[in-house]
Image 1 (cartoon, rainbow, N blue to C red):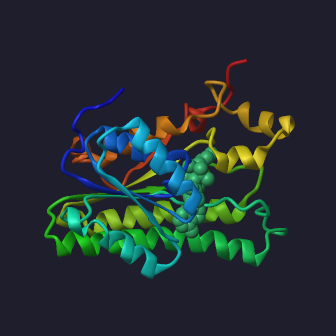
Image 2 (spheres, rainbow, N blue to C red):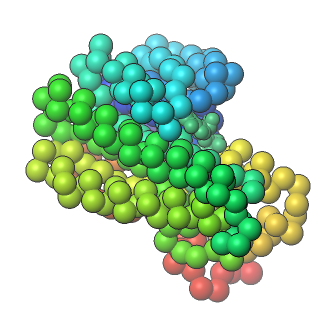
Length: 265
Ligand code: NAD
């Protein structure tokens, strides 16, 4: 496994770290020498993540922090947690929801729309804002912010989830603009665009409905959903200085899905 020091000396914050992409990335950050704060809304999930991190990466420098990313005071307190490590260097704004009642333009309720945007968009904005304030406070000349969007921000889906899709489009636009605004300060902003994955977020939504599953799987040239760890490897690259000339980009990790016309039988 990867145990290089690609993130040595870097304080990293991961939101939505109790499972899926966030947990895999937190583990990979630690394996690469980063100090990690795992943040999530769910206490139980954080406790389980703590156990897993302790078992998988002995000696890892990490802590857990309960945080609702849609609450600015929570996010401010989260970022302040990195002060004792010299301030945050890497902010991975990854927490997000896909509401089960998210549907097309006619059926989606305003409550679903608002909740989705509160977490998926405002949460990312707060994370970006407080990371930048911290970079400046600690006089950082470089910093990396990675925001999780989705392939649905790039391609249309006939299995509608309009609130989610619009929220992820907003993440792309926000990230791109902040990359320009802060480029001369050395602060990089990139988006991660995962394709559908084997994580609870999607798998709980699909359940045992084979037709629903097949409707999506057919679009993968590689014939399978992605794994969270495959996203985590991209995030480590974006977090590390290896990507020092990469900013404002939409990093698509999708097994070729967004490039496909007819997929292999
Ligand atoms: P996941 O459900 O396993 O993880 C999401 C985490 O976010 C959970 O641990 C949850 O507790 C946390 N969370 C939810 N609301 C929060 C809040 N208000 N404050 C703090 N934490 C909160 O799902 P995942 O697949 O790992 O998702 C991570 C990101 O990837 C999300 O932004 C999601 O939209 C995106 N994404 C997922 C897929 C997929 O197929 N799984 C595809 C594209 C994009």
